[in-house]
Length: 319
Image 1 (cartoon, rainbow, N blue to C red):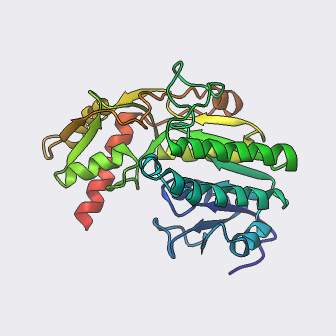
Image 2 (cartoon, one colour; image 1 turned 90 degrees about the vertical axis):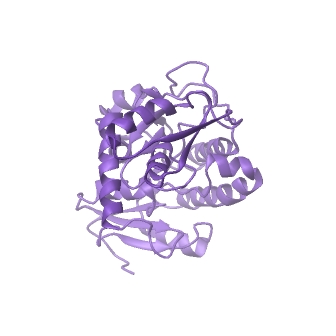
Image 3 (cartoon, helix red, strand yellow; image 1 turned 90 degrees about the horizontal axis):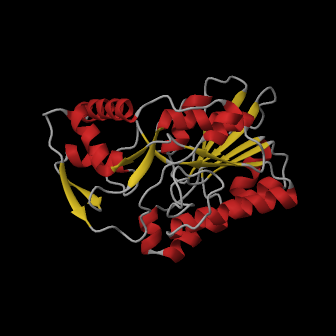
C-alpha cells in the first residue's frame, strides 16, 4: 500500500466501490492533483475502479483499519450505509446497529485529524418525511417516517455536533433518487433499475398506490457532478439538496421506459396498497446549490432512462 503522495491531495471515499461512489470517482479521476482511496466492505469493489485508485477493504468501525487511512487524507466523502428504507422498516434495531456506530465513529476520528473537507452524503428522499409543501427546500421540517430516514437524520445531527464542537468541516448533501448506469438488479432500492431488471427477466414490477409514489429522479452523472462541486465549494456547516426539481410517479417512469424499450419487451406491473414507510411525494428544491455553484442537472429523465436501458441491454447481450 502506498504511503506517500506528497504532491497530491488525498481524498478518502468511504463507500467508494458502490453505485454513487464509483460515479464520483469517475468524475474525480481526471483531476491529477488528487490521489483517491476508495473504501468498501467487500474484498473487491462492486464496480471496476480505475487502476490509479487505491482500494482498501475493511470495516470502517474498526479504528485500526480506518484510522491510518484518515491520517493520510485531507478530504473525506462518506457514502457508507448498510441498509435501505425497506430493510430498515423490517428491522429498525439492525438499521441502527449497522449504520450509526460506524458513521459516528468515522466523524469523531475525522474531527481529530487535519481534514479540510468532510462531505456527508445523506438522503433527500427520506429525511424530510411527508411534505408540507413542494418542492422541498433545506428549511423544510425533518419528520422522517422510516427508520432509514431517522438514522440518516441522526448521522446529520452528529455531523452538526462535530462541526460545532470539534470544527469538523462537514458539508451535508441530500440527494434525491439517483439512477443510471450501474444501477440494475433485484435490489429493493432504485425503482428504475429494479424495473429494468424485471422487464428483462419477465417479472412483475410492484407499484405501491394507484400510480405509485412521486419521486425526484437525478441521473447519476449529474449527482456526481454536484458532489464534486460540493467538495470544492460547499460551505462547512451547510446542507444542500441535490435533485432534478421534477416529480415523476412510478407510472410516469414506466411510460418513459415503454418508449425506451419499444415493442421488444413487455412491462408487467402489479399494484399494491401504499406501504407505511413510503413518503407519498418527494420533489427537491435545489436553488441553494444553484445559487452557490451554478449547478443544475443536465440529463432529462427520458434521456437518462434511454441511456441506462441501452447500457443494460449491451451488458446483458454481452453476457
